[in-house]
Image 1 (tube, each protein chain N blue to C red):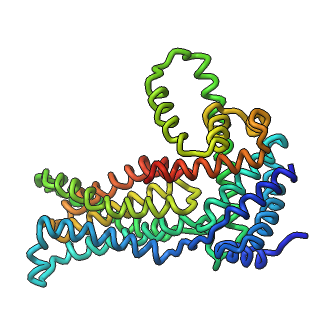
Image 2: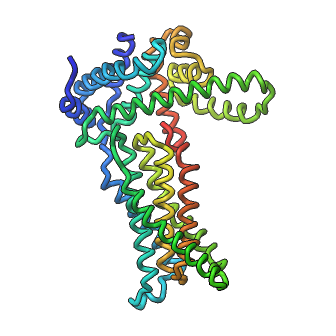
Image 3: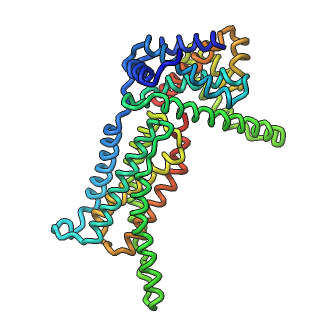
Length: 174
Length: 214
């Protein structure tokens, strides 16, 4: 069943008030919509990751939804942004790989300094969050590789990254 | 896939905490606060212009200050609204305000060129550096408030959001400058004050987008 616009807007407004049941229903409807929207745009092997990334962004940016406006144009704007960001990152990764081959010798000092600062911040995180961030965001492994390496499920890896980064941001800002 | 996305949805639902939706009026109140802070700072440092104090304002000074004030508000409104994305939303009111403000530097250039054609010395003097410096400085309050607002939201056109932030901050700063600057001639306002707003817009376009990426 496809939820209509008015229902989605109502669920989103309830979610902003902290209603978890409404929020779960909203996320399920959003997932279905995102699958339809992104299926024609990305490789099938990247579809799940992008849908989940977009759901995480929806979660982080829920306050930016205006309950007096329709829901789907808001979701579409977020999906389009994440899709473009996904393309940008893929392009940059390809460029970095090329640079690594051409310019193997670089100044390592900034990387070492950053690593020391990160290690200190990581001491404040639970080990599971720390490991998930380390594998995916620093070593550049895929979610499934990190899942296999840690024994955490793929969705747990994503949740741990999301919560860990949120906590790191709070630590840095405070 | 469905299984792992279902677990993610379950985890996100558990993680949910109530959020306060971003309201435009709250963002606009912040922008007005930034404008007021810039005005108070410069008036505290330099005092108010004598013709304003005597309630005999110079017409060119009043009109140009009004134009910069409208540009501040229109671009701040568009920047604030861009924190709440929506496909198909139109936010082009600021462009019309910018077009109206562009009359000031274009008019100044016209006066300089026609003056030169008639053999007059250029009326452009090197007396605008302080206006640029203090205008940019006073605009920092507005820039900081708008950037913080945009970071809370979900802007999807980062370049435009940065440009609008710079434009609003620069116009706010120059509005504050125009309350004390003794030069109320068209050439000074059009060139130097216009240049300050242009520099702020370019800086906003370059500096703000990386701060907004999400």
